[in-house]
Length: 25
Image (tube, rainbow, N blue to C red; front, side):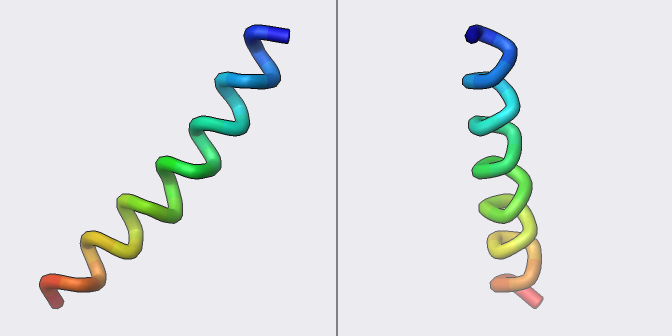
């Protein structure tokens, strides 16, 4: 179960970082 939770968090972090990097642009 811990692995599943980690995957979910990773997916949420990827789009968040992408949005932040595109914002300053």
